[in-house]
Amino acid sequence: MSIFALFLEGLLSFLSPCVLPLVPLYMSYLSINGKEVDEQGNVKYKTFKVFLMTLFFVLGISTIFLILALSIDVVKPFIDSYSEVVSIVGGTIIIIFGLNATGLIHIDVLNNEKRLNVNINKSKMSYFKAYLLGLLFTFAWSPCIGPLLASAILIASSEDLGSLYLIVYALGLVIPFLLTGLFTTKLLEFFKNKKDLFKYVMVVAGIIMIIYGGYMIYNSSKDIIAYKNNTNSVSSNKIEGTFVDQNGNKIEFDDYKGKYVFINYTTTWCTYCKAEIPDYLDFSKNGDDYVCLYVMSPLTSGEGVDSIKKYISDNKIDIPVIIDEEEIIYSKFVPDGYPIIYVLNKDGEYIGYFQGATNIDGFNQLIENVRTNY
Image (tube, rainbow, N blue to C red; front, side):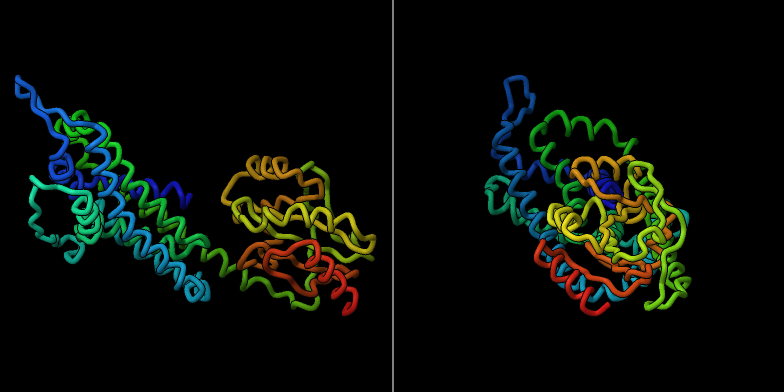
């Protein structure tokens, strides 16, 4: 949902009424070296020259977003400490931006427009000037792209792969510019004839921001409530209930009494989780006094049960994977990072966890530590 929402916000930023009307102006700069006029006065553009100049313009835009993405990665560890609060406050701000974009409320500071006035010699456009124009475009503030960009940064700061999400927003913004560079004549004519269509863009963008802001608040509030409801102590926490694995087999943790239980809570999008799968599967077959499981939830994976089962099949996971649809196990522990392994002793009591990716040697060391201490 985050990926789709941010890409769509980037696309809507391009189509917004304070960017799209300026596209012909940008393209008049970028296409000056490739512009041709035939004997009938028809204007045509040399596709390769215009596209190459547009590419440097896009590189200028991308430079600023790359800096923003790196900046988010730097501050992410501090944000993670207050992730629920950041998501709730950020979601509230995004909803306010959305209400303003739809026109349901009016906030003067968001409706004031500021521009950078830069004189560029149109007759001597170069790749460096195109790159510089992209930098200046990204720095420009307008009532449309400002709130959309701000909401993109807020969403990215609340996600585990923050820099990736911001890059996705940038792609939504720059891909239409690249397409305009490839099909300059046709697209500029289309934009000219469809002006009325794009006046609804900000309303659509506002609705998306309101929905996603609510989604952020809902998820974070859910985590807080789950954490508060987790009244069992660390030393005596047991997982009760009947669960179902990927093959429809019923699982009860009481059946594993007399053995240590390793519960690997994972997601479909976690790169490190995927990398350690072969070693975890090998580890699961090495001992008689422990059992290895996976737990996956539609909430943490952001995908449906069918997608989770496909992930299990694609990665040849042949040990039980509990599909935690009701988030019972999730609410017991509320994992704050992946991969993470929760360990139960031979009485089925929670005794600790191990967080971070490891290999077969790390898993073997883990079971030795458990055997020694419990």
